[in-house]
Image (cartoon, rainbow, N blue to C red; front, side, top):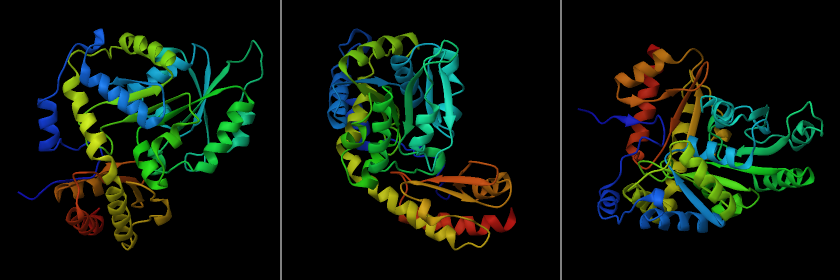
Length: 343
């Protein structure tokens, strides 16, 4: 049977034999009681990498976002965010349902909300209005094709937040990719934010897990909220060991995913039936337009052992990752060239 090339997401990766060995050897305890040594080591290392005082290990990126939002906001508060942000479109309305938080989505330029729009959206003090409590950004931005927030923009938006005395939160599920693309340390990108989350199963190849980072006081509060949301885990060092292995061994290879994504994009740009802006491919996500509802095209690709996902009315997403190599990309380009003819 031919190999299945799975480009649906960078979350589809399987643990390597070395990662599995680290999981099997992990020292564990009960994390709810705070005595799982592997989890504690992971939290210390993640906080150190991101330049924050403390970190909290959670099962998923969605829980990381919701724990952080609830930590930094109160019911009835408003959060300014980009219209295509994950917290708006991909978390089942959790901010409203779980925490009573109002989201204020604004149109952005590839995830970067113009600072003048942000300033204009901040509510004046009035008992009729929700309080503007937070600016939430996403880096890289999933629905904008893995777009990276520039250092210049981060400086401008943090100044705007400071001018209005509001905090900022970063959904950094793919912050590893942003840091690689900009050739800076992750801490540089995390610096302006009161709290930041990162994911270990996107880009790094771990099977599960995210972390929320911030001050010790905020992480203490976040730990209680994690418990409230059902995220308290027991002998979870088995999973944390995979994340620790990923931090130690897989961060420095993320540039290869970016190279393969660019190669894929260049190959697809040469197919007449496909529309794709090569300049939009900054990291490991490639979004392309097939000119019609993509379900038949995706099905034809799947029949040829290439897995992709619908990402809009005529859009398809492909994501490169640790389980994809050069030959897979060559094969994917050929499959797409054939499948698009019969879709």
